[in-house]
Image (cartoon, rainbow over all chains, first blue to last red; front, side, top):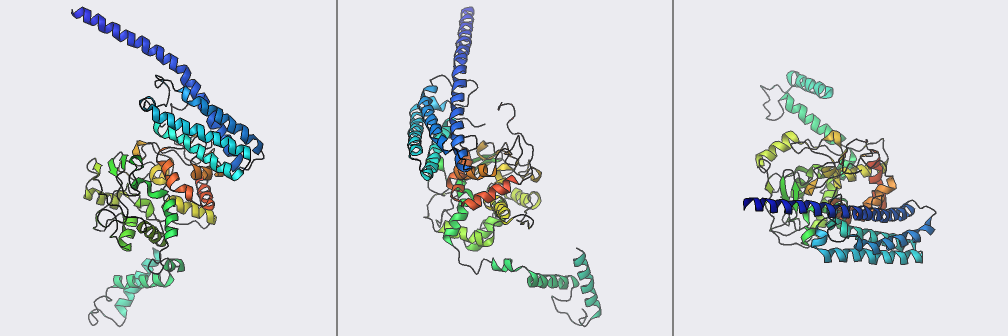
Length: 150
Length: 333
């Protein structure tokens, strides 16, 4: 009897190891992917800000950066499928425990970045500076609650 | 020192040789040579004290609420006194602040008579902000950054008080702090204040620009950057040789980064424009936004500062001595 329990426990343990590692391996790819997309979002954001704060004569680029940010915003939610909270990631488990809150925070980002594109199209620099900040704030909507700190 | 010595020598001589011989003239306060020396020093001090000081004497000037509001923003909006996570009332306290010394709870600083600071006089307020003493004479824990606030000019303090007292009072009782012994003891605080803490006044540097000095005043007194960004020793005193070099054990268990202009471990790669834009928006040069308490002090405070003051802060921070202090080894690669 005892041996059967031992064997069963071993099987359960090994299967955990196996499935655990396989899902870890699966999520490794998506974690790296979403980190890259996030970096590019931040990069475009930083680029717009660089143009604004240093008065660079590259204002024509702002619209393209804004469009890229909006494109990325539409990808964001799909980059967080269930079970990708383990491994080398700063994503908190709270994302999947609190999915609706996370979803609405991402939607805030989508909405504000869409506005950013519109403002960039209009060429109103003052409104643009404001909208950049509004969009920047929506980063915090997720990062404050759903990202581990360094 | 030498001037004092000379003065005490000469006052002794006066006492010995001149017309008020102690035996004949027992005037209670003047006979003693030390007292005479002190009296002369005091007189000279009054006579030659700089004009500015008398101008700033708190009694004569009516406090200015809007100036006070600006100073409140410069102090980061006193965010520790608002429990933002639970959407509690503005400045009514109750926010837990985790530190290595235990958990503190922000106090109610609305002008409510019973649970807030409504019955504080100007003197009470100044004493609390500069000496860390409650109106009843209890010692505050230095989690309340009077260690920085003691550098605020008296006039500014009164403006700040006027603003706080213009806000709606909120009745909400303070929570008792939850501390690791012996930090919770009053005598321990007394010891701390007398032997661990050495208050350093704000001294402006005439060799620097006016805006640099303004930035230094804002950073060291109002914005109290060092309270989080300077590491502390085991007794909770700031390590002054590590001024602004960051701390692993910031409030709420968070890391407070190195904000000296060290190229690799600090913010040496940030330009002055980067710094002032960051203080206005919370957006780092890499396009990421800031979180945690820094995000709050920007949102509720620094972002309302005028451009010149943000630039002044940037000028000051960028001029600091770069200190190597790597707070996040390994993880960031």
